[in-house]
Length: 567
Image 1 (tube, rainbow, N blue to C red):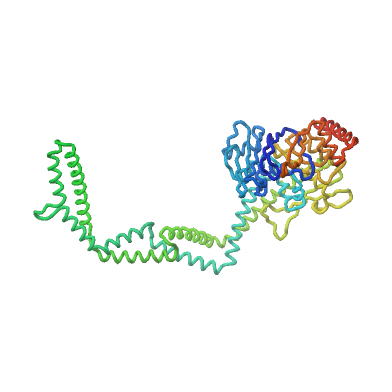
Image 2 (cartoon, helix red, strand yellow):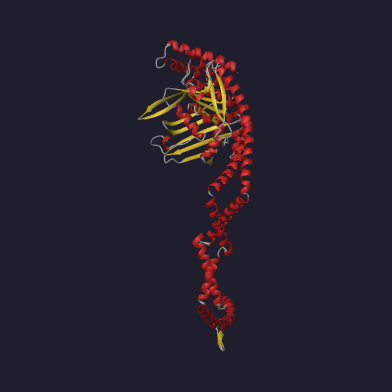
């Protein structure tokens, strides 16, 4: 449940902190006072779309925080466990910051998350039901999703299996259709790939080979210069005939200084430096000698290197700017060639594969359809029970299944689903979207929400003016239905109906005030006496009469009796 909500600099709300409790809470007030703004704030905590337009004028950012607690073993805690978010104390704090530049910052128990993760968590915590959901009832393409939501336990695994098989089927079918439609292009592509793969493969290209060859070519191109430098260095270091080299002279100097090293630390330091120089030069003499031994002029090798570099350059001109890119391209075309050759090898069998996959898909589709039809019967019975409570006992609700002859296999299954309605006996069943009035849509949507709330496990349900278009005994029935839902889940409800307000366990009044030159929204929890005045205002309008107050008291008394029965 939502325990506490904090809103700062959001639309016309400067600062608002409100504590919510179990049961049914209503928010009432004049139109435009900011009731829906509060619901919008909760919607953002649940991962709704954010916008810089929500930030209060003159402020840098809007900040919304919600503190939630859920039943042990609930869905939300399982999601948090999967995401590695700590909730040891049972408390879950969702936070959303919307900045003036449009940037969104989301946190769950202090951990930064993206909006998709926040939405994944939020949809397990809060279910917001507003007038826009009536529009979903008016869109037949949404009806299948509603049925599947109701029948999640029966159809989830079958639907997942069907969709996996459908994806495999479409890939096979597309491959076959592509081959049929592009036989000539297919053959040309196949030949080109074979040539390119063979050309790169036969070159036996190695990563870094070009740099090694260039270095070797440069040594051969500068053979004389290298030889002269090595010979001269060897002569200087080792000397010739009776002339001692630098290394021998350093050795003599080292021995001379070692003979007097014990007389003064400075002499010893000089002797050590000469010793280091002697051994370093000795290593250099050895290295120069080795290089001279390995030095060999091979004009044939130089020609070989030039030919190899030309091969590499040709490959780079065609397939990439480096050996790495050429080899990466080779891997790509090798995989494509393998796939095409495999397809060619099985071309005669491809049509059979498509047919077999189609047959398997049809069987799965029939199983899925059967499960949906069984669930549809259960949904119809459940809806009729709920509608009877809402004074629509003569109404017949049906889930209508059809199939397309032109496109029998769909990504969602074999069925098109649409809700049908008959509001009066003797009339024909017609599509709900074409005949339902606003009040009927409100009641049908409330019936669906009542049924879904029992299976979804969401602990906070928000109704945003779902009672539009109804009055009288229907309004009372809706009020009792919402109150009944509140026995199982926390319910927050925005309403203009006094019957609904009277059924609340907690009542908040929302009003706009002018503070200085700015408009602000304020929220006040009403006492029992204040509730009487507010319900009277909702019934009578701007002028609250004695009769209106008496009627308000009567509504509250009736509400108490109705809630006692619900308990």
